[in-house]
Structures are given as structure tokens and as C-alpha cells.
Image (tube, rainbow, N blue to C red; front, side):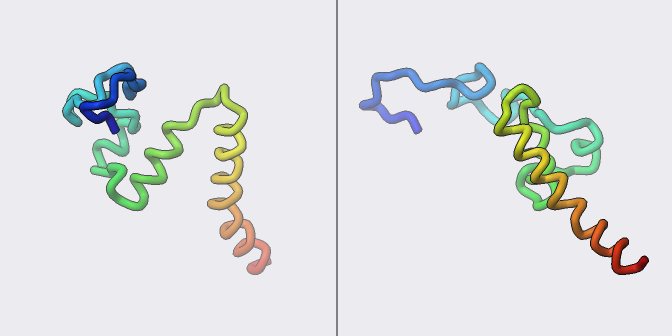
Length: 84
């Protein structure tokens, strides 16, 4: 947060001033999510918002993407193994 007594300039999110309105900020969601009405305020939209904000070039983000993949694929694989 920026306070009146804070004289240092903080980083702006996406190159936009932190006090900008929500409509002025870019929307990183895919078009399909926007059409379905998913936002970061819903459970499914929050996961989608988080996953779409990951950067492929950063090793920590890549590791988190693999963790997400294993987390969502593990129940499906387990059910398939039980059925077979």
C-alpha cells in the first residue's frame, strides 16, 4: 500500500498506477473465461487467473505449473487405476 508519508515510488502493476480503476487494468484471462463469466472472485476463476499469470521463463513458475498439473491429474489417474 502507498501512504501519504511514503516518499518512495512503488512498482506499478502491469505498468499502470496502483490507484487506477479496475477497468483500466489489462485482463489476463483467456477470452473463453471472460465469456463464461469466470473471474478471480470465483473458485474456478481464481485457479484459472493464477495459472494464466504464470511465466514460462521463471523456474519457480514452471515448478508450480507442474504441481498444478499433478494435483488436477492425480484423481483422474487414480480413478482409472481403480476401474482397471
